[in-house]
Length: 119
Image 1: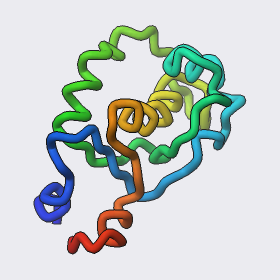
Image 2 (image 1 turned 60 degrees about the vertical axis):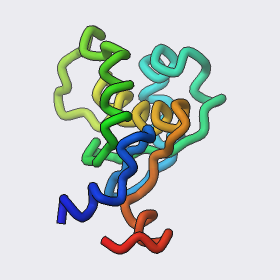
Image 3 (image 1 turned 90 degrees about the vertical axis):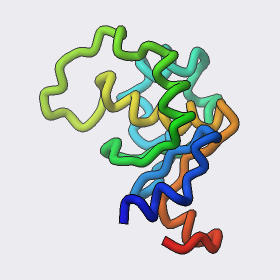
Image 4 (image 1 turned 180 degrees about the vertical axis):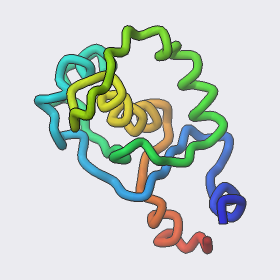
């Protein structure tokens, strides 16, 4: 199943797909501090989608470009069971924006099937 899924994700485009798509506006206030830093502009100016829970599949290009951002150097606070507000929660929202900002997209996996891509 995973191999069949990856066959439909163009490795040369900045793409990321997850089980569902939620709006970046979801819990925006709780994530405002980190999102402002990551987006480098007010979060209200950004439109996009993300995969809640960060369970997603991405292209090689997405991963290479993301690696160049050195996000692992950010001072991540401990996640103590909260639903939102710390760096990991902002990053899950940032990934969809990042893909779109680099000429790709974030979408739900079903998007591939809706485009006629057999899984």
